[in-house]
Image 1 (tube, rainbow, N blue to C red):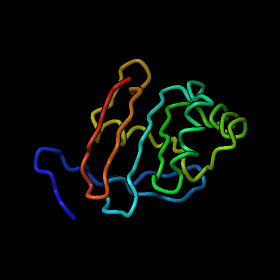
Image 2 (cartoon, rainbow, N blue to C red):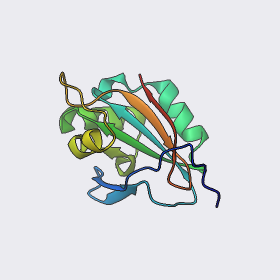
Image 3 (spheres, rainbow, N blue to C red):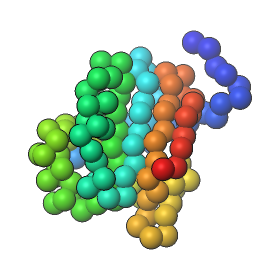
Image 4 (cartoon, helix red, strand yellow):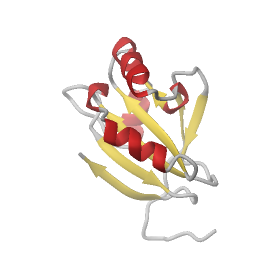
Length: 125
């Protein structure tokens, strides 16, 4: 394990997934964590689903949304997503990772956390 001191460490944060289990962001893991925050789950696309499927074995994916559960479940069904990868627990996430938005509570973003708990990529979309 090698830490790059120029990259920030990720805070630890437990998020409740739609399968009612908690997952922790920012822990040392064997997989890279990819976190996609979508204020509106209807912005999810077939291309995102294809990308998630392509890297499924090497990446742990988190989709955090500020959408209502009904519309989120519709997208989960449409794209055959796992409820274990989707969370409506956006408020603490947005505050912890500085992704608050006055309009809808959450900014659209992509974040990659490596196996050493470092944020190696964070972009607001």
